[in-house]
Image 1 (cartoon, rainbow, N blue to C red):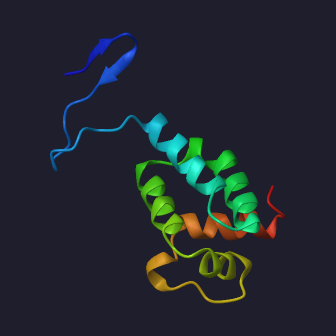
Image 2 (image 1 turned 60 degrees about the horizontal axis):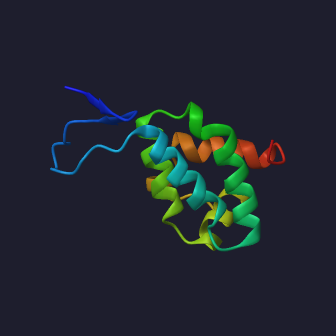
Length: 107
């Protein structure tokens, strides 16, 4: 059951005992992380990708994107630029979107 107090929606706890985080908070957190990865190239590329795509992503895609953001900057840059092959565990629908975004010049 959802209850509201001062505009904030309280959600029931997840199965793991942690409170559910509203998706808008998740997207904001991922956008911040994408804009502040460590290298200017990745900050620009992943930040622009996040700005254009986060609102369109479903829960699974958000989790996949978050998993990618945990990988080193150098590895991610090599993968999306095509300089190195993407390991199978990271070769997801989100990686395909990132590669297409990179090929299109970040647009």
